[in-house]
Length: 420
Ligand code: GLU
Image 1: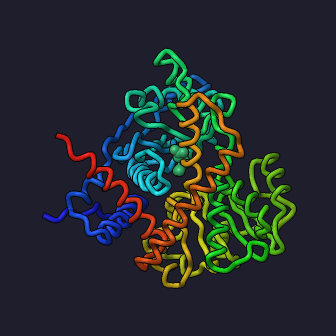
Image 2 (image 1 turned 90 degrees about the vertical axis):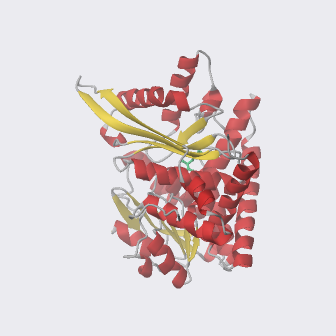
Image 3 (image 1 turned 135 degrees about the vertical axis):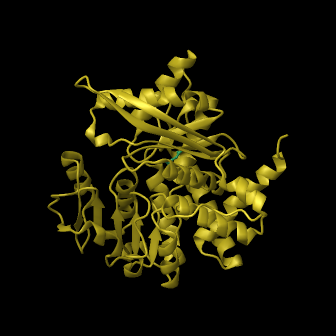
């Protein structure tokens, strides 16, 4: 009987459609397809919180470990009210392909708690994080599954996870989590790694299209860990950043936003809204404004059948995971837009997570320069692998990246064999 992927729409359907295309291209059997499509382990937990006012709230928590063929599972922890099991499943699958693509020795995982971090105090978030950690403790660890920051979490949560894990086993285990503060065994260069990688890949994409960064313009959706850093690095290369949005609004300046001043404004006020170096702008318009490069760096599913036809940029660099739906991908390809897929564009974070884990295992800290040089080398290698594969097989960058990654995971699986 032919196995079929689950129906529906949303990130999980997009992830399955991408896998199905790769499996068809590689000519794999239904059995292998099913192995690659099915998460190895899923954990659903409830996370009770004693709020500061004494009342109790209960949140849903998830950890999905999609694949272990190439090593321990690896992936971030997300805090957002949009988190649900299917979203975490999709994100975990993308982590498997991402780790394989940049050749770090991991499988893929993702975690989430369906909570709005902005609606909670520091103390409440600490209790939620520690309780969630203790609930998933049996399935995480430096050789099993290593969480990291994602949307809504940061090095602060990673410190709490490390402390909770370490307290439970009775000694400090720096390798149980990555994206920690540098003073707790985190890596130099980890905080800016995703955005540094995004900017580096954007530069390679521009070069492939003959675009000079100094004459180029860009728009960035999302001004968090990924978007803010990408804006900084791109501006540093001479790119004119015309528009930037966050959850509260957007700003636009045709002649370019002064990113250093915008960052200072965001640090002061918490949002890009009200910045006096640009005009207020319709946030949705950021993806379709008149620039060379668009960087969706917020959440999944923002480039859809409704707006993909209006994209005026010639390059889309996916800073977020899954920002382009399957339907939008087809439209963008039709219009000749070069879409650099998430598993390549934003892989810098997990690359330096790997360096952090390696440093923890060695108990030796590398210099920031070492980290950044090695990051650039890996990103360039992945870009070359994907571009060459795409050219040889006449595939989009996404189809090429997914096929390459799926092939590596499947090879590892076949070499290990099926037990018993
Ligand atoms: N959350 C990041 C991602 O989606 C980083 C994951 C990690 O470092 O493990 O790639």
